[in-house]
Image (cartoon, rainbow, N blue to C red; front, side, top):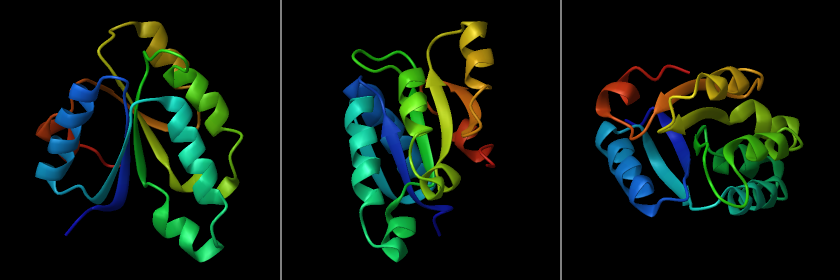
Length: 135
């Protein structure tokens, strides 16, 4: 039994996305996994979901978004700024977990300013970090 209907992985590194996808699958965390190699395409994807019929929106939106911080074009924090402009339904349903290989304490404190960010994890995901994921 999956803990969540769907999760989304956003990371410009395809290898990290693949590793994280395999970890999510192995943990049985979710039935569906959406992957994006850019924050811009992920925001567009969420905006498109918001256009669907209301009953469908809740079932298609990801429960958790694993978001890399350091990406070209649009980084994780820019994604969060755009995410905050989405509909209430989206912002309420999608819980965000920041993923990073950075140990910059400023990133941690900056991410805490966003209500939708529920956790901050180091890359790559591990079975242990996924088991402890209670959001």
